[in-house]
Image (cartoon, rainbow, N blue to C red; front, side, top):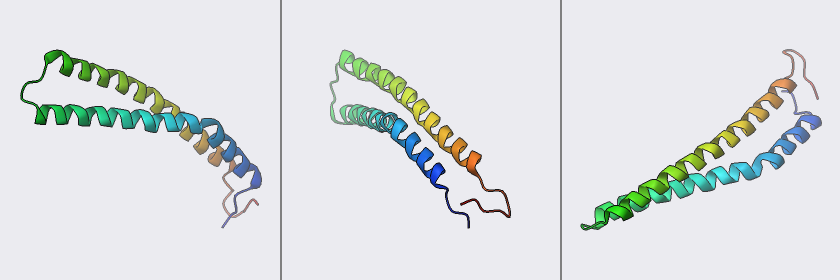
Length: 99
């Protein structure tokens, strides 16, 4: 089996270091979106008399959170693409192992 060259390891570390914050923002955004959906589900299940404006505002917040989560997912996708490109560029030739 081929070992990972130190230059590749360093390049991967640089990508992760540079992109990690954006990945954390995605996780936070997705978590906030999930909590908002949970909040609406609980509100509808537990309260018989729900104010229209309250429900409308909560649903509007979902739109904002969804938009933010989609943006952050694009950032994660870019990080993933950089990692895949780094691995593809360093892929050892068959039959030969780069060290």
